[in-house]
Image (cartoon, rainbow, N blue to C red; front, top):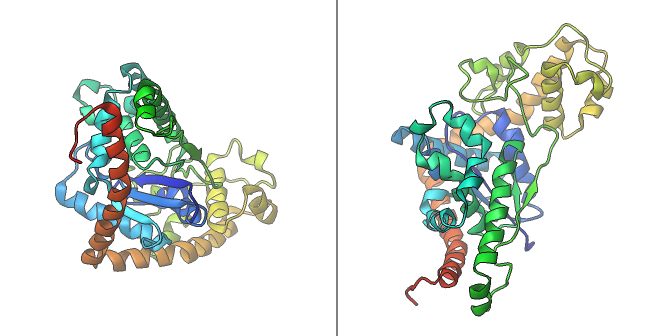
Length: 344
């Protein structure tokens, strides 16, 4: 197996959709051949905003089912939920004491999620970039597949790793450890459709929170639902352009072409060479066929898996046991480095 290690996580907040699949999960599947992979259902991150407990349980299982149904092999790689591995939270506290307040104040995503009433936001929502750093570094992961909106948080993880290594350099050497104890994880941004937009408004990201179900394709949608949503997707009256430059002022066209490219494993330029000059009606029909072919089996397998919660839970327990073995080694070293006394 390769020595480089990938870590990534998906929040269990319900209604997994095409954006989650093309922006993250499809790339997770591809990375299995080149890296040792840990794929985590980040349930500790989910509770930074209120979650109904019973719904959270269902959502954890749904994300796990999506991983497996999409082609992630939980026997060759590690699939688990974050809350079963206490070392995530343990290292996050150490990082709370390493990271600087000014660093967190610069995190744009907190400002967006907290909105105008920041005083009412949870401390967890504010500090969760430190937990994200712990998620990655507790496994000393070398690579992290991230979307554009998470690149800032990965930079923070790199800053925390560097500051920890610098602050404790003497202790790290005294314990006979590599002076670069925590690695500098590299971002992996792959695929032609890492950012999938709403089917109703090409200027907005596809989101489960959009009140219109027609704005997104859910991974659990059946063939008829997928077809109906694509046919009703917003377009403009012009034919498809023959070159990518022609998509610049046409967000809905750009989005649909990007979805087709990602599902077919091609570039936007290739898609436009085939469909450029044609009308949206015929392009949408082809996109319907492709989407049903690619997504239909995933949705069917997800439904089958979620009807067997005992099996899904067994995958998570097994994955957590294997993850804990790695994370525990890291935390043992961290405790020695920091100066804690521990059972030996």
